[in-house]
Image 1: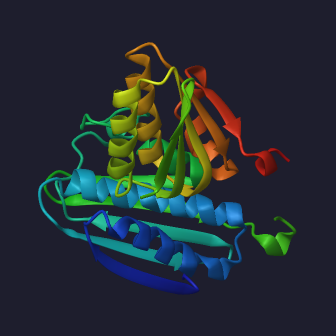
Image 2: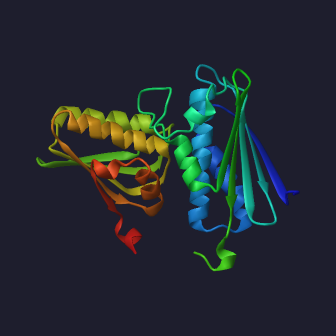
Length: 147
Length: 108
């Protein structure tokens, strides 16, 4: 399936970029005519994925985060968030609600939020190579009488 | 600063606003904790009425404040939640610990 339109974004893993990343992706995804709720869901999931890169993938340095957003004819918005950071040893465990490798006030709910707000979440990771998170959301949109 | 704090002898209310994410949460946390530790209010209300965005960093913020208030026997309420933020908050199970109230227009 070939996307209708693609947007690529590369940002440094600085926390100040979290809001830029989620706003940029959701502004691009607006072409699919989503409802306000669908846009909020996308913003929230992207925020979680990008925060993971900043907090976990590059814990002690600034690295690059590669975000690709693809729009498809059937309403699909596919967002790929990739880093070249430390990778995840056990992806299954990392995705369990409340699991976190860091203490402090990390809730351990980042992947739970992504899974609950998106239709599909896929994670591929290799230790010392990096992680790719793919977030899929099917926009039913305002054209279908929602919102 | 995306938080304003008002106090009465019985309750302290923290009015949060703007976007609560991993970037913004630490400043909000410091300001609330500073006030709470000085006054130890019997009830801490977190008012989300003017919050435009929140991700799971906000859950960490709420859970952390719950633990702080609980440590001296106080209570906590989370009020005025917009629908989208309620959706995030619900995933944490916080409603088993503290009172959660939706924003008026969000109840429709």
